[in-house]
Amino acid sequence: MKPIGYVVVAVIAAAAGFGLYHFGIAPRVNVEQAQTTSAPAETEAASETEGGADGLPDVLPDFTLANLDGQPQSIRSWQGKSMIVNFWATWCAPCRREIPLLNKIQAEHGAEGFQIVGVAVDFRDDVLKYAKEIGIGYPLLIGEQDGLEAVTKFGRGSLGFPFTVFTDNQQRLVLFHLGELHPPQAEIMLAAVRKVNSGELTPFSARTVVAKQLAELPEAKQ
Image 1 (cartoon, helix red, strand yellow):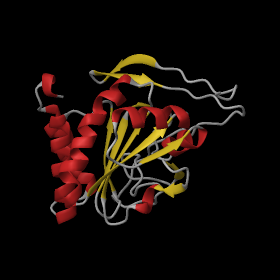
Image 2 (tube, helix red, strand yellow):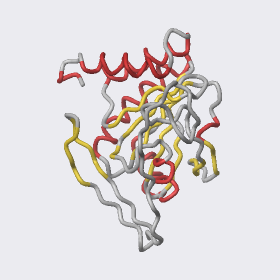
Image 3 (cartoon, rainbow, N blue to C red):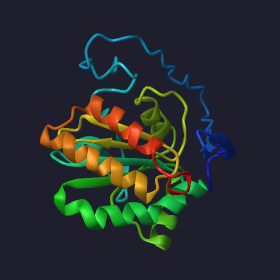
C-alpha cells in the first residue's frame, strides 16, 4: 500500500511543439523547490553549483538513488562512459513510448561507450512491476522525493517528464532534452557527443550545433 501523503499528478501541457507531462509529488513535509536564475558568464567554465552560461551544470550532478536491487548507487558510477540519463515515470505516456528507443540505443551503441541510465521518479513497486513487464535493457535508479531532489540539480527547477541528459565520456554535461526523444533527434545528439569526445566540439558549442540541426528537422521527424 502506498504511503498516504504522496500524490502524483500528471497534467498534459503543450510546450515547444510537443506534449509534456508535468508532475508533482507532494511529500509529507514541505520541500522548497530550487529556483534558477541565469546570469551572464564570460567563459564557458563555471562551477558545478553555479552552472554555465546557459544555466546548466558543467558536469553531471552527483546524486545517489536506489538501484533495482535496492542498493544505493551514484549516477557517477559509470566512469568513462558517455551518459544518457533519462528521467521518467510509469504514469507518463511519452516516457513509456520512448523506452523501446532507449533500449535500442543501449543495444546498438553500448559497445562504443554510451550508457543509458533511467531515473524513475515514481513509487518503487510500480517501477519494478513495469520494468519487469516490458523489459528494460539498461540500469535503473529509483526515487520519490529524493528523485525530485535529483531533478533540481540540473538548474531547471520543476520540469516535465520525460527529460534526457547527454554527457561526454568525462561526464561533462553536453545536451539537455525536454520531452519525448525520437530517433532523428537521438541520432543528432549521439553524433554531437561523439564530436565532443573527439575534441571537435566543446560541450557548449555542441549545444548550439544541435539546436540548429534540430530546428532543421521536418516537424514529423522531431
